[in-house]
Image (cartoon, rainbow, N blue to C red; front, side):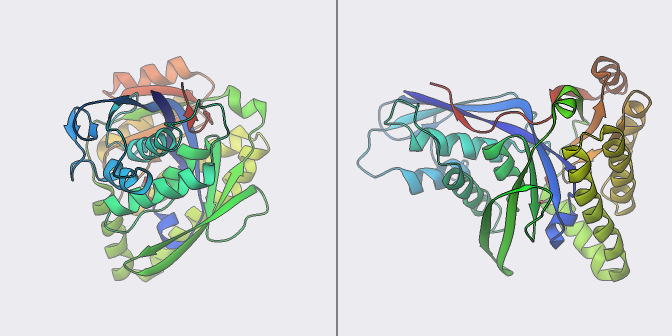
Length: 325
Ligand code: MEV
């Protein structure tokens, strides 16, 4: 038997703008998805049911990594993440399944091939999302820590690899980097607040695309969000938490201007700001989650809960995918 886990993620800067080639910064959070493989009768299963179209990620990874003549196993999944809330639960699941399937026949103490896991997990996401997926979530679930995704190699961070994907709009290419965080940043916390409102990423991405088609001059705001990602990555690497917080506040206002916030997100952001360095929505918006950077995590969590949000408190930059046993 083998088990593997991978972390969820929060986007600190660059959601939506990353769809137009601008950089994005994400951190892995202390809430993980775990998968164990247990021998079973009959065919391969997930959650007790056969691997079928209800499990597109797992089915794709099984087709890539498991031969027809292998002994069937049940994938048993446990998750500490709010599902479908913009915290990268499907990317974490894909990274954990890839690691577990690749290491099901060894004792788990060998090094993981992170680039291959990230590649497989990204392709699984694309398979499940009609060929369109940025590698932000899957790179962060795989590498852990803080990840900068860009259309070019950035000098401020350590370049890890290039990801390409054939999409319905043609081949796309991303440069994946790790941002190394000083201890002072690791001592701060993120409080993630969930609105409990489910908001499909595809619809929010399409909403922004429609708005930019009608008002092309709004691309200036997309470019400014990209600038915030570059400056924010530099500020994080230098331990400049106050600057990072201010940039997060500006990012929220820009995203709200693009129409991807909602009253519930704005309320949780407003509730968090008095006790935090900065707060913004995270992910696609329209519902889902916000996050606050804070040195007073209990007070910030309480303020968000008082407004009806469910919280996860996390340090910045949890470990990436790993074999658990
Ligand atoms: C969703 O977590 C982030 C978006 O930028 C979409 C994407 O990057 O594919 C809204």
